[in-house]
Length: 438
Ligand code: NAD
Image (tube, rainbow, N blue to C red; front, side):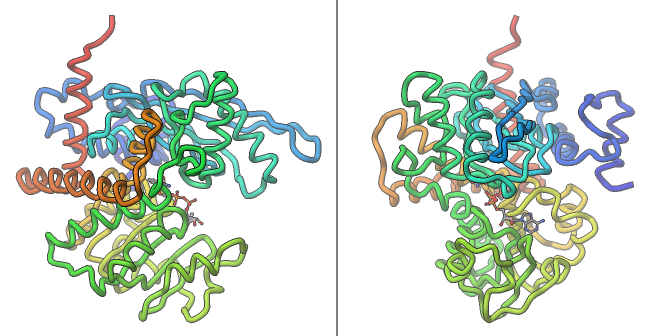
């Protein structure tokens, strides 16, 4: 039985297993529940409210029918989950991926609740997605699917209700279509309904690189405390998309050296360092695998995880570092650019070997922090400079890191548990103050 499966089986015995959780394969939602279980003993009297976190407030499943270019009518399944709205409107991305399921979106929404509260943004947590491989759609099909999905979830989103943003396989164009569709349905332009828009439509400067920049800021703060110099630090990155490539560029600009990259098309290694900007330019507009980049040696996934490096940055999908490959990892610091990349059992293995894990709810909070700045700018129609945005992002994340680090040190708990304690305390205090209705 896997580590996740045994926890889920125990949970099933206590009859708390919701209908949508498969005990044999608990997946990301099972992982989220296990993380909550680890936090509950640290919450004192607020633990009374903890089941609030174990159930999403609202989960909407929508049918998304579109006409394909060849005349067929095809139906996709879409979701929008609002996990918790105690501290403000829902906030979280939209993912287009064939592996998207309701429990996955629930977990991602739960992590957004925790992340937004951990860095003290005035939001609840939400997430959305469509079960689709967008690479198989033409641009016209993709636009029709995005617009129909937006119209269907229009019941629950809005600038004061729930504000989507980009995630895996969605980006500025997706957000432009979503903003336009919602605005048409409302009868007025509503830029604040989504973040991560193009700058020309009310998007924020600095949003594109914000998640990767945030990974760098929290890594820098952690490295200062554990005595790891940034200059010359070797970094290995899984996933060279929005988060991975921005992180690679920001780390490299700060003197670190990207020595390995793993993406769907394969892995590459170069001890002298890979120029991330050159790699971005090499891949732009091409369907070639990453291994076609000149001057590097191809490596397998196992070789990637075993890379001799100081920093490992998973920036692809959840469940990538498991009990099966955690033993290979030699990095001193794991920075979770992706959401949920490390299973709880793998995290325990890493910690017992002295490897520090910077949890997703803190490490990748840069994206939603600048999304918050975008939403504030939209509400006031007054736009800030990129320097302002980067400086404010640095301050929000450094302060959040310092507070969470201090809780970890005081209570002798790891950083994920410390981040969850900080976040759950804020969410459950708000829940308790607002009270139950009726
Ligand atoms: P993306 O689609 O831009 O990039 C993902 C990259 O990972 C792609 O290059 C893809 O080829 C690669 N990939 C996918 N599966 C892989 C695998 N099994 N092995 C190796 N590489 C693989 O997505 P993104 O926006 O960069 O998001 C990546 C992760 O970061 C997700 O977990 C997402 O939820 C999280 N995240 C994103 C943001 C954001 O602002 N975009 C913010 C916070 C967290």
